Image 1: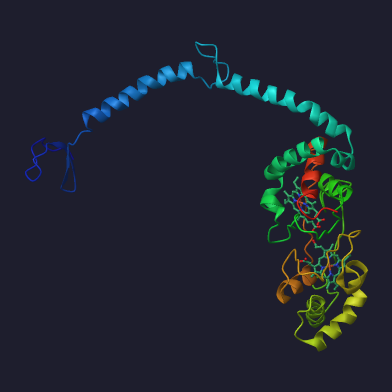
Image 2 (image 1 turned 90 degrees about the horizontal axis):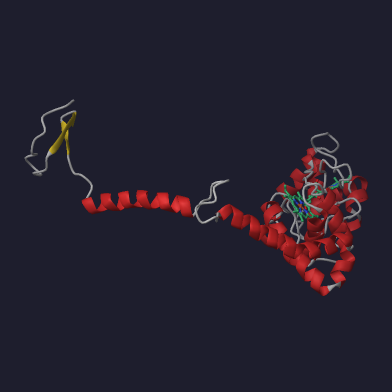
Length: 286
Ligand code: HEC
Ligand code: HEC
């Protein structure tokens, strides 16, 4: 509600004439120096806009634009690396690995592509992440750690939408009623015993029989795993989904079926080869 503009008795400042519920607004304008800096910035911005343009099509009075410069630099960079990328496209990965200059170029390119495309799932430096994203830096391999195996996994994925995907499906023993909860518990106990962690020998013994019937075809004798089938080792202490009893029971109950996307078509052939060499040298390559 508008009121009279007058001097406020307490502060000695003029009021603005605005009042809300008995509270009157004091008129305290911005300091002059601040206002002038503000106006100066606006004036400056027009000059800046003209001489330092970033809008498409605008090249400014000096015939220079940030966009054109970016394009020029990118073109120069592409021209610089093109011969190397062409060589990588034309050379099988095993052969690239034998040529030090080409290999170090490929590993550097692979490192950059990995950070962009793979690290969200596999962690920085391929350290792996909870929930089924394997470490690529250890020497445990689900599908194989030589150059050809890695290249195939990266190109076509695992349980991906690509026709050539790696494919293997563990049965859902609990959900589909293939095993009773008691059998699942016993089998989990046996799986624990494979890495020396079972505390109930009688249950592990019962689980051994179930394992021999239901699991050995994929996970192998003593749980050593099978790379042909992408069945991970159950005997080392490296786990995709957790190695305590509850997590193992959940794996048997529902199976997990993690998905690794196919990269062929999304990344070009040279990038896939560079990624293969990068992953291979992370520490566990065979
Ligand atoms: C959406 C998440 C995701 C992304 C992104 C992803 N991966 Fe994977 N990757 C997985 C999963 C899940 C597995 C495990 C599949 C399984 O259970 O067999 C896997 C498995 C792998 C394996 C096989 C490991 C082994 O032990 O045999 C390699 C190699 C691999 N990824 C490389 C890559 C590379 C290189 C990239 C980037 C181009 C990438 N991944 C991006 C989820 C992902
Ligand atoms: C048809 C092949 C197949 C059979 C049979 C099978 N598995 Fe698997 N299992 C797999 C595959 C493939 C995976 C990889 C994880 C996934 O499903 O993504 C796996 C994963 C697991 C895991 C998780 C491992 C981890 O690192 O977290 C456990 C535990 C497991 N299986 C136990 C069993 C047990 C116990 C049985 C028998 C009751 C069994 N599996 C039968 C193929 C099989």
